[in-house]
Image (cartoon, rainbow, N blue to C red):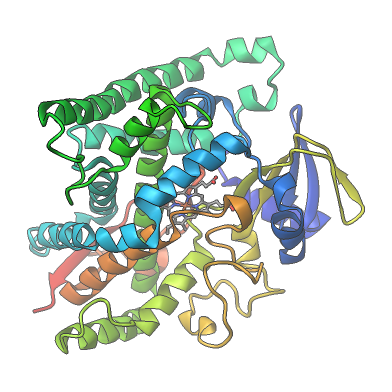
Length: 450
Ligand code: HEM
């Protein structure tokens, strides 16, 4: 499928309505494209729609879907999600990691300075920056295989985001046999992942053993990092659902992918939109520079920057459709949704629907000035972090990454596109993947501001 599914589904729902049943192969697929229906599913009937679909790629790469993002709704999922929130994603931890964010953003600024006016692959640098932040916060340091892990993350995101024949015809032995190339690729990736993730875990065990109990953990801040917490949980006997090493690896991969990809993608789209809208760029740079020049620091309430981020996440939500599954038969608007249906809430389409947004294709941060649309949901026409039990637990972590990096980038450089590239010609099409990465990397020329 070359055209991203979100666009096909939006066009189809313009013809057939906001609740569509598609029979994709053997799979019942329900596509939802209106705030009213999203509210019914994600709020009123949340437990019934809090499951996830597990496709073949997810089962092989994400250790049978035993991570947080893909695991079935239930006690195991609750336990793993709670551990991640307690030890990585809660507001206190997010504040603790501020120095990591600032150091890695400063490193990004330095590497852009070194480009001394030549075009640079900005997207690639961003992924380096956000992956460093995630590694240091979750694994205690930048793992030596970070580059390989990054490459595998990008590949796996596209493998789980498409609609493959092997997923659409799960009972067909012929299709499974014909898909041997893909299955072989997935198994090779999984073996490579095993080596990298085993190494991260073994390093933690070794460090703890060598310290002879003197060190509390491997975090940069002296205590335990997420890997230590899960290793300790594995040894403890009072865990409701005992976990093993594969479960830990699944969660580490989850945190690395979710923490790296979504933040980098959001910063990338913000810069693309700012390049295409010089008036907005000038206004947001003026705000950031005024605040920093007056020594107010990046913690200052940068109101316009906040609107810019909101508007970016409207047009380019990092996760394009909320991937849910229905765990019991339900009735929505008089239609029966069979148990086991794959449910896609097309937030990308809802964020651009002219019935809910004036001039929806225009990048206009001011539209968020009035009203109280926020990130935590409540108004179902705007759901960049999802809603309900499966809502994104990394909201604060992700937003902090995006804000800190943007402040540094907007303060330190003036931006233009390479010679001969016009802003209006930038390709605005997303990859066919679960996240909304742009098909093309952004190349820019960064000129130091002072
Ligand atoms: C700009 C940044 C981010 C955006 C826009 C974003 C968006 C989302 C969305 C839309 C979902 C699906 C929610 C649903 O089904 O209702 C999600 C799930 C998730 N996100 Fe994020 N996310 C971001 C950053 C992060 C970060 C930094 C982490 C962790 C380090 C993270 C971890 C997760 C996890 C584990 C899930 C699955 C939750 C579950 O199934 O219980 N996210 N995210």
